[in-house]
Amino acid sequence: MTIAVHISFPGTKDDPSKNFNYRCFTILAEKYPACHFIFIFDKPFSPLLISQKNIIPVLLTPQIRNRLLGHYWYNFKVPSLLNKYHADLFVSDGINSSLRTSVKQCLVLKDLSFLQKENLFTRSDNSYLKKYFKKFVAKAHHIAVSNQAISVALTGYFPAAKSKTHVIGYGLPEGVTVGFNKMQATRDKYSEGKEFFLCYITEASASNTTILLKAFSAFKKRQLSNMQLVLVIRTAQKENPVKDLATYKYRDEVKIVVPANEESHAEITTAAYAAIYLPAMEIMEEEGLTALKNNIPLITTSNEFCKSLYNDAALYAKIDEKNIAEKMMLLYKNENLKNDLANIGKLVGSIYSWDKTAANLWQALQETAEQ
Image (cartoon, rainbow, N blue to C red; front, side, top):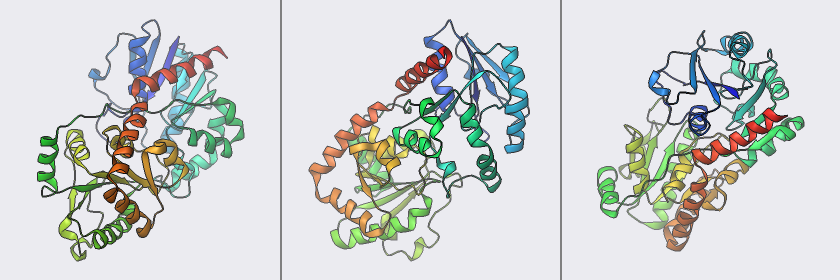
């Protein structure tokens, strides 16, 4: 079997560590040496990314810089390449499919944020998806989704997708085991040696930062503790999300950190008393799951998408300062609850592995090929 896969790295650097298609299909190429995998790149790539002999890398121009080029790339360039390599299956990188090929296709959907009113897409992108996504769903032979909430929501939008959709999970790196001395050294470095709530500020959660700070104020007034708040900036802009922090009453107990790399990010996560991740959109970001994987209890947004990801391993808060503060106080006062959530989180986090996700995807692709 020959499977063609679009591998697209956003931004200017190749980052295979979190690229869904790259991670899954590199694992599958190693596990199934008799199959052939065509890795299609739309911009120059490092040859070091190709680790198996049964992977054929192809640079297919033009580079996808906008939706117009993407439409041309998928519908005119891809069909010719699939014919050239006699591909049996084509797996797109995200929400697109090719409307001009007879080769069976698989869509991989990590979330449905692009269908929500508030999302990270441009106006032109939203217009394009409004026009074409229903056609992409109809064209796809298989739709792989990361969790059950996406499957339910997708079927709600497009009933015809029900028979095509399978939950395959999502992959994460293994958790890190850190001793007490290392955790204390991290606290000395980032929070004056004190315990801290770690809050992830991402593209999806940045808009809730002010509400979080108000909740932290309420927590401090009620508990009179030396607990600090560490804001880890993970947005593309890496800017201070709170422009008036200088006027904030507890500003000396709020620390803003931009991790230099993933190692620094993991270091801060494992030293936290608890993690707070409050996305305003139902979007697949790894921060909350990373906390669980590292045995850190989590407070997150109360919605079906988050509940499908974290199950019983998190406390769910409405996005208002009182409710968020109550959850912070609950964790602070109830050590047994904190420990129980951490233990459940470790179990839930263990489900999210690249090997398991790749195996589930492979099973789905085999079913598609046999149809």
